[in-house]
Length: 341
Image (tube, rainbow, N blue to C red; front, side):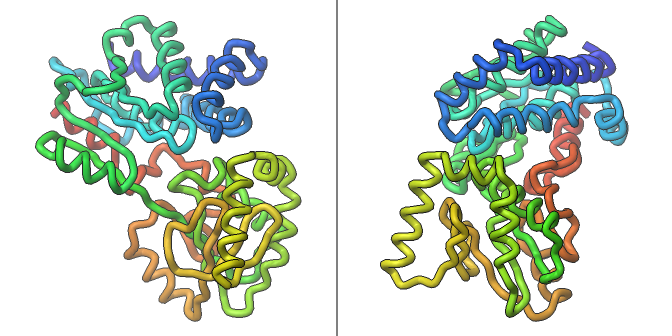
């Protein structure tokens, strides 16, 4: 397949996904129910959010300017690229999937056992749009066959595993990263509502979820409590999710028994600490004196993203990465394009 054809096919995939979402398709409902049964953290609301985010990538206006920055070409011998996907949030491996195929290679997908349904379904849709993709997409659940390069994402422990077994291959290995927000006390209610989304979309399980707040001394957290409660759908989802609430109650008891000061925000906890990452349902905060010094310090840390005052990501955008917001700051598309040179 030519690059232009693959581009057009992904644009058509975006249109098909949008149609399924708009019509509340029974087929999509069944897929999402299977995904939720496979992984209870994948609520219908969060799966729809993830699919909607993909449609915002897969259109000509967004996809074309991004693709045009890379020297795509038709290779005589496309590479076999293995992609080991994480399963912490729905479709977290789709961007890698997109990069490999748009760079005109073949992909060997090793999905997480926590996130198999959605990526399989999207692959089937893509093959239905363009049957030639059947020769370019392969799924493996256990041992990977021969491959030319690998993109693997997981925990710090699994990253060590990747290094041990696959470091002799051309590779991108990713472990866990954290995201932070910087506040100055002048945030509007809308800013704080968006911040709550940055913190707890996907229950805070993603690398782009804000898990640390940097605040000036004397910062008043009460407006943040109020803003969280005003995010009715998300706040209610946290309250009604059994596993999330178990974590919230457990941490509250553990902090109380350990005499660790904390603030109870009704469905999550704030605790003063510089450690990352915090436990699930907890957001850490710490104080800063000098914003410029803080910004310089943050620029030297291996963060996924930094949100808010003086930072490069606005409130509410942490869970809306652009195509160029590469995980761990590694240009995945450039890596894939260079494989064919």
